[in-house]
Length: 325
Image (cartoon, rainbow, N blue to C red; front, side, top):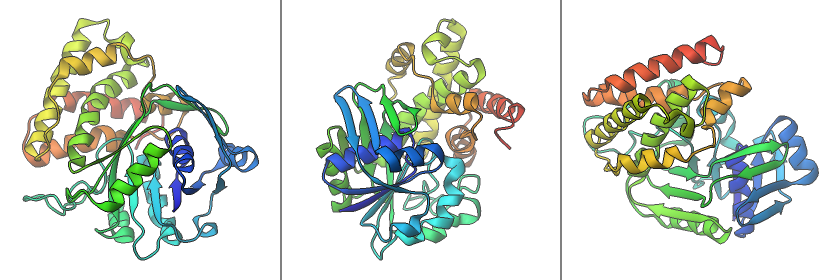
């Protein structure tokens, strides 16, 4: 099975190596020194189950790869317009495209029953570029738990004790293509999971990301240090409750065991990716991770004052660093 991973950073590079180990013919879209290192030496992933190396075809130009049997998009939200503009050479008539990303995805309202079905999210998908490039049939949703970082060009360190990649159809079916792709990931040595409730899985992760990520951006610290202040813990709890209410109003059913989420964050030394972007001077995923859930709250008529405040403060922080407009 020919699979391209579009965006071979920490998550994409790890996924590419696991798909390679699972038996797929894998290629990646990358750029800069990371691309040069992959072309010269392949990818190297350091994880709890060992060091994994893979020689994988890498390029910055999708046209060099041709049609694929499946594509995984693992870029961050600010790069999605460039994906929409360049993905066409990878697509055959039936090529599915799985978006394995943080935050609210651009396709969230596709196949969502109710008055919001078919609505667009222009801050995430400007001018509906992805919707027009892919159509409603190709898209697969994805959620990843794999705290990791590129430590040197071509080298990825995975801190997550148990990495998970969860895939699901926006229409809620448990399709053969999703199960096949999840099976390849599992064959590569980590958990590949197929779900009929991908939006619920998106919120299960997003609720924690909203609390941990917003406060980390404002403090510059990993979550475990922030919870030393009781007021921060209370603000996080309120934000989690608000996020769960938004999800439920839109038909998702995330777990509401927020005490467990807070306990998990108390142990987290890994800085959230959005804080890493701030520190490294890279464009920040404020729209997809923070602002889009707030927009969904407005659409659903759910009050979210804690989220409203923290998102506004994160926008100001991003603007002051020149990393968000």
